[in-house]
Length: 340
Image (cartoon, rainbow, N blue to C red; front, side):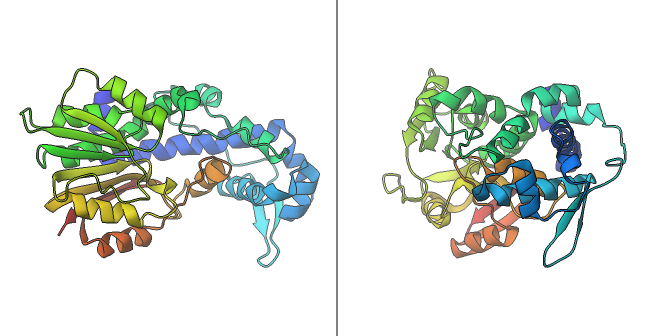
């Protein structure tokens, strides 16, 4: 399928493809563990602390070692016994073989095989990070990491969630707001959806100076688009109350230590009946990919703060927002709210 076909899938179809991709991610972690002798270390059952000693994990990263073991349990490569003091042991013969659906993986990622994914998924850096005080897997929001973020933000599964948000708010009126707009992909997509008139405004707010520059360059030539720097954990008092018809935040909610100011900002800036789309939120929801996502983000910088579904709904209610619809791609949740 083409990328256009992908964004026209139903959420259920896209989630099926996404979860097959994450199953492949579990397999990539499993293969890395095989190469590094992890299962030899687990021939004798071990606590997290004992496993950490065998692998040479630095003490401060033992919680991440536990996440690795839990991911291997989810994949069927390790079994966990005990409650108060869990012990982990390799499953003889490894997980039951199950062929991957490469068509689904391609839909989610644009990659045609697990082997191709292995070259783009940097789980090796995570293993290296466990045994050193340094953190080689951080990806901060700056020019040094801009190519990485641009690749991630255009991955089909990510773009799917963003385009659904764009479609959700794009027809609400001429004044549209992209909070945490990043390098500006969503701004261009919103401009395509927005009414083509003299009153149309598409505004991006972004905390990273480098991303503000990138978004501004990407939007050059479209006078309807503006980009400003702003911290979403603080009030955006320079923006006019009730001016916007629709607003969205895509892929950034879980990086907010305190999301309450964001909700107050959205409630203040949206007109009554306006739409606020909170999309691609890494969450604690217990889906199949939860363990692999917890592992993947454990050492990421900036740090993530994963909400539960109820956390999001409580924040929305406190801000006077009513849930319209929702879906999820595994642990990545998507919500649309209406300002009362």
